[in-house]
Image (cartoon, rainbow, N blue to C red; front, side, top):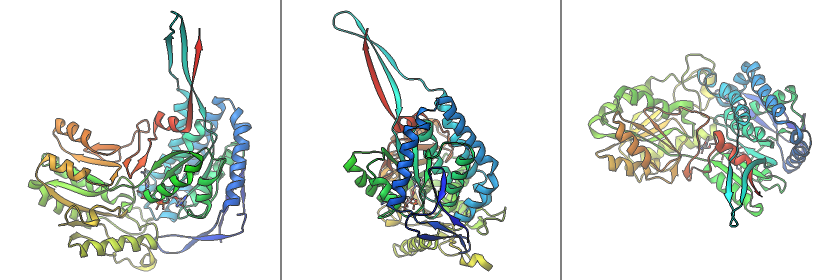
Length: 486
Ligand code: NAD
C-alpha cells in the first residue's frame, strides 16, 4: 500500500509516533494510501527546520534567486500535471473536466503570479516638514514574518494550499503546511516538486494529520510560529483564533459562506440560469463561493426555477474519470451524511423539492461512492435553517422577491458574508446593489471570475483579512517605517 509521508527539512520522513490513517477515494470507497498521522513532535521538527531555513539559506538568498526558485516550482507542477491531476481526482472525486481546468493550472499559476508580483514591488516614501523648517524622509520597507503555518481544506486542495504558500514564500517566509486529512496527496507531491526544484531544505514543510488535539492544533499553538493563515470552516477559525490568542499571533482567515445570488427580472434569463447552475453545483457545491440562497424577482420566478431545475436534472453525475462527467461525489461518506441530513431537514421544514433531493442510482463500484443529487428547493422562509446554515453540497433554495430593497435585505440577512452574485442588465442597479452587499466579493453577471491581483476574503463569519495581490503581501510581511531627519 502506498504511504504518504511527512515532508520535513527537505526529506520525506515517517511520523514521529509511527501512526498512519487511511485515505479513501470518495467515488468508490477504495483505499488509496496510508497517510502519516502527524503529531506535536512532527510539528516541532518542521517548525525548527523552517526557522533554520529562514535564518539561513532562504533568508539570505538574493530576492531574484528566491523568486526564480518559485518559478521552478510552478514549472515543476506543470511538468507533472498528470500526476497532480490524478492525485487530486482520486482524493476528492472531482471530475477531470473541472480539476484539469481549475485545480492544477491555478495551483501552478499561484507561484508564478506571486513571484512576478514581488519582482515589481515598491514601497511608499514621504518628505516630511519638521517644526524648525527642516525636513525628514519617511520610507517603508517590507520584512518577512518568519515561519508561517498554513492550514488548508479539502475542497480545492492544491489551489488553496498554494494560494497561501506561494505569497508566504515569495515574501521571504518559510512555511509549515498542514493540508486537510481528506486530501493529502497533492501536498505530498508538492514536496517532491520543491525538492526537485532545488529549494533549500526547510523552506516548505508538510505535516499531515488531523486538526483538534493533533497536528493542526499543535501548529496553531506552537510558540515559534509567527502567523497562521487558514481556510476552512468558520467554527474551526474560531478555535484557531483562540489558540493564537496567547501569542497575539497574526491570523488570516478565509471561512465559510451562505452566499446569495440575486436575479432581477431585467437579467438575461438564460445567462442567469446557466450562471446559477454553475454557482450552485460546481465542484459538487463544495466551493466556499457557491450560491446556496437564490432570490429571484417575482415576474421571472417560475421560469427561473423551471430552468434551474432542468439544469440540475440534466447534470451528468458519475465517474470522475469519464470525460463527460459534470459532477462527482462529495468529499466523503461523513460529509454525505451531513448533506443528506440537510435534505431531510429541508423536507421537515416544508420545502418543495423541485429537483434532486436524493441519492443518484449509479451502478458498479460507484454505488459505494459519496454521491448525492444536485438539488433545488423552494417554499421556505428566510428563517428556515436551510437558509441560514452552510450545507456545502450541490444545493440551493430559490425564493421570490418584489423590490430591490427587499432583495438587498434578504441577501444581507445572514451571519456569513463571503460573496454575492447579481444578475441584471441595469448598469445603475448593478453598482447600487453591489455597493450595499455585506460581503467581501461581488460578481455581476458572472461568478468565480478571478483576477489574482484583487482582494479576496469575507466579512462577518466568513473571515478576517484579505489575500490576493498586494493584500497577500500585506499579510505575509511586516511593514516597517523608517524616519530619517535630514
Ligand atoms: P475544516 O475547518 O474542517 O478543516 C480545514 C483544515 O483545518 C483541515 O486541514 C483541518 O484538519 C484543520 N483543522 C480542523 N480543526 C482544527 C483545529 N482545531 N486547529 C487547527 N487546525 C484544524 O474545513 P473543511 O471541511 O476542510 O473545508 C470546508 C470549509 O472551508 C467550508 O466551510 C468552506 O466554506 C470553507 N472554505 C472557505 C474558503 C474561503 O476562501 N473563504 C475556501 C474554501 C473553503
